[in-house]
Image (cartoon, rainbow over all chains, first blue to last red; front, top):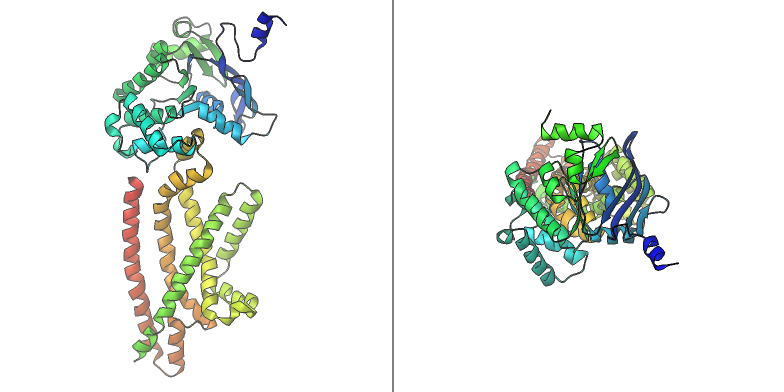
Length: 268
Length: 211
């Protein structure tokens, strides 16, 4: 085997030389008789930022939840760094799933902060119980991260005392505290007042600039435009089209994509 | 005179009550765990148990335990048999409270715990139970109060509680109407303050749950 062949054959390497961090192969998912995902393939490369757009009920959330196996697909495979984390042929391995979820951070539409815990405790909890950091070490990291998302003054507040935008930033800090290699965002701003969305989007953009590999399901085209390297349009349980933001938003090849973009942009 | 005699049995009524509440509380943890188990057989067994407990009148349970199971050690003590019977019966109701309390939390709490790979035990002890606890306490307090009244069925197997003492003195010639009126007042003197206590606890747990 020549060096070049060896390089190209290595699992998890794509043509532009960046490693594929997270990959989904042939993901199928139905709820009852309704097919939600019909054979989805997706690669996320190191440092890459992907935005998933599409109509409600098109399978966006289900897809992103399949990527960290919060939702178990009916068929297919999920890989991290070229290694199979889960596939429909084998029984799930709990340890592999847990290791995967530590590396793949998740931010939810509804924040899902722990209601009885303060902002600081929310960020520290899994550091202590999942990563087995000492409480002092965990709290120090939490303070640092909450500072980064602009909440240094709100450490001791409970979720109910924080605005939606603030809660979501705590949730981002909580996910980052696990030192993930990939971050997934499931409509992170949909449940937040429009005015407060900016602060969450700013944190996400900052994170992207630091080189974090990210996938975000979003309805914010303007954000997607300057955040994403690649935009995926998901509709009717399948990837209709993908490309650069420019290609999808201004020069889509498929009629279905153009119709959706025009409708959201308010051109119709 | 009659009143003093009746009051003498009040201690036993309270012993039966507290004993069966504690017994039920311990058992109910297993009932709730069984209902949430990932093993189908265990879930089935718990459901059958709960259906059985709810489907039979408490009186039937009492007599079954006393005469059926209890010709050995259990039948020896009517007090003990009453505590066991009421404890068993209420384990199903308390178990339901715990089960419902745990299920009342938003699904997102579990999703966040799963996404953060927090181990099951810590997920329960650090996040789930602290949130469910006020809800569980509020609903089990109501059951606990109705249990005060249910201690009266101990009298059927001659447990020395309030109702049984009442029977005794009526048999001995006291005025039945007077005696049972008095007994009614004594039960009210127990249940009304307990009801007030329950509402106070409930109010506090609502505040705790909102916080």
